[in-house]
Image (cartoon, rainbow, N blue to C red; front, top):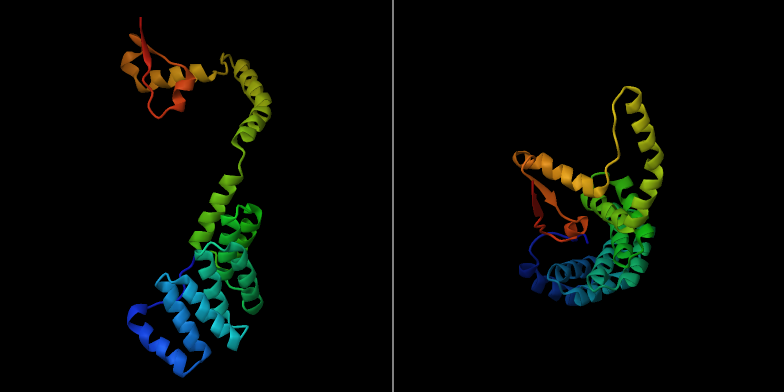
Length: 217
């Protein structure tokens, strides 16, 4: 979530809170809401933002602070409702970003990507939006399906490459996974090529550390 506002709230809070009683103005309520947000007092921040919105229902700052405070309380559905109202007032990168975050947190990835994209259209340098889009796309990947599709797509190309090498007199073959493991061992352990060879099963590589068995030749 974007942190809204700036400055040190602790020193200013008593004065603004007193002014909110004596002088109930929209900007005073906004200042109190912002400071309570920065103090992680999100429920109180919502109360003050609602007081500002009671004076001006189209207060962009009031809607933003209320929305991101709801997000901090993990009330994402309410956040989305509030920030859609903020969009009617002002279509900014921070509104689109925070709606994207809400959809992201509720695992509605397509909607999240859509709002992150809109954020980036306004501000191409919004780093968090770029990062979160990448996370969304990664979460959408079905790795097993990708690998299966890859095999179907690459199989005819492998055969073509083998035939082309054959035309110039070079014999080649497609290595299976076990053969690739042994090949990599030989490449990274050149001194052992003629004395030792790795003997391990590819399933061993599902663990973090592999202790290969060694064949003495």
